[in-house]
Length: 161
Image (cartoon, rainbow, N blue to C red; front, side):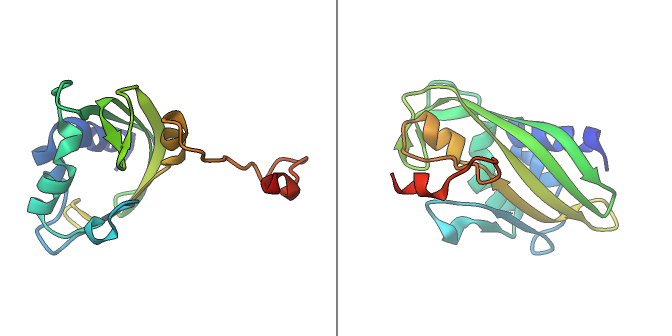
């Protein structure tokens, strides 16, 4: 596995849910975890039908239905044929709401990472995905602070203002 594989994974996630589902092992032989802010009961997938149902919206190509046009772009793959980490960029346009908050249709973007484990046939058996929602929340006007603790002059008292 390499960056080419990661780019195919990202492309399928954005445009072809069937092809995306084909990258995973047989039902109940894989676990796909994705961070959900609004519904933790829906954040783990074990069956192909669940991939198609819960992640199918990412392959939307209708700019007028409010579901958004999503693009995942793999930027880096770290790993081998057993384990890998994909760092990716995410952009969405024409989305009416994000995590229940109106977006006014503005273009939004952020980053994320997906850790993958593969079986001997090269199928994904573990997918653990985390997306940084904060830049999107900030772009749509939610009062989310990005605190830079690592900055030399960071003053924790500034958080109390």
